[in-house]
Length: 96
Image (cartoon, rainbow, N blue to C red):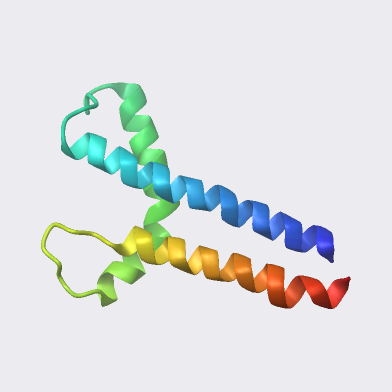
């Protein structure tokens, strides 16, 4: 069971970095730092969008309009942190 918890923790950690990369990429794209017509840039952006949008979109629906500020990635990162801490402090000690 510990192996399953460690695998879940690693998957959450990887998704944490995907969310951060997606946020940074969206800033680079918005400020024209990266060339949006480049095929590689388009592929990276599309991949990050497909990985993060199913989680971010439901949060955006319930959030009030904050203008151009999107804090849904911060909410997802907080949820991931909470879930990791819950697994480490509450679930894992049950199996030691």
